[in-house]
Length: 272
Image 1 (cartoon, one colour):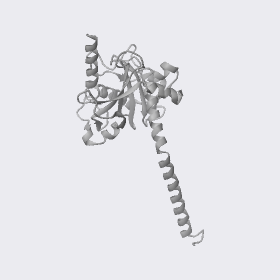
Image 2 (cartoon, one colour):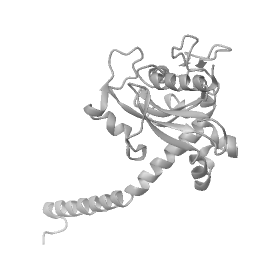
Image 3 (cartoon, helix red, strand yellow):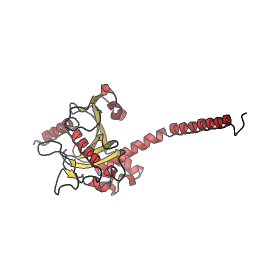
Image 4 (cartoon, helix red, strand yellow):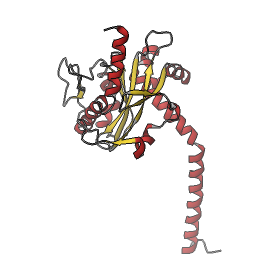
């Protein structure tokens, strides 16, 4: 047994401590993995509810202040679908619950390279098949009242992952939220500011020619603009990133064909 204050004794003590601490951390990580996944799902649910305005509309509260039962109730109004972004048609031979778009985006055979696009979101690849969410209150008429589109793109320091909720006219934005990013707190991190997010409700994603036109202005949004919201102070690159990712996912490189298909089906049903 080496003496406690010898070099060998010090190294032995340090090694034992490292092994014990590593074991404790590993056991904790494995033991809490299910809980972590549950929390991730719950966080995504809250962000979808905030983007759609359902939490405030039904309970007058942001989703973060709802009980688990209230979140489960409102989430029950939302159905998951898969969409082939190349055709814009639903994919019906796959289970949305078992599909992970991020995992698909990382594999070459289930993703496409993003290059030579009009609006570059700053990421290298995207999934071929995307997940979308249809929102319909039980007992209400029509196929859906809103659609929620997962969106992502590069900001200043990170990739911003969020949800864009569109009203049933498929032109008007209901809300925009981001559930994961690493932008600078107080600057680009203001994408989480409720006051800034509230500006998106009622803005138009497309112009009169059907081109994506929503944007984050450089400075205050022009008075009366139906496309722009105020710029994020001191966060020019993050602001530009939000503009670009919205336009990319709104274009035919993103959900554009899907939205056009839905619009045509709605027009056919209404006879217009």
